[in-house]
Image (tube, rainbow, N blue to C red; front, side, top):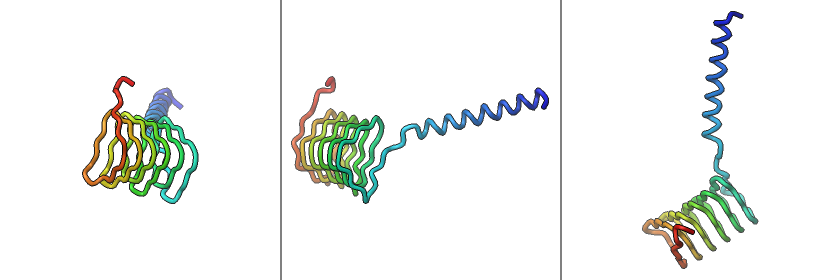
Amino acid sequence: MSIVNLKKEAVKIQNNHKKFELISSLYNSPPSIIAKHSTINGNISSSATIEIEGKVYGEINTKNLIIRESGFFQGKIVAEDIYIQGKFEGNIVAKKISISQTATINGEISYQTMLVQDGACIDAVFKKINQNT
């Protein structure tokens, strides 16, 4: 093989490697999904995103949490960002909470910022926490 052909092959390999790195970075931290017909009892810890479509009883410590409309959680959540569309019972400690109009919530919520859509069903004690904590 000539030098010119070797250089062409090296460029192809390099370009393919860059494509692979780009695709890998996009899927570096896919969400952990608890499926609609699943039930989990216990503690969950993650440095990425957790999506709940089924039922979870226990404690979750994560960066981001989404409770989908079909999702149910009972227990304690500690997270940076939480989006609730489904049902929640328990305690939340979070920097940012977004509550959808389809959400049903019972419990205690400690937060830095919160957004609640009109129509959400909430029976909770709220405590705003200092942004420096």
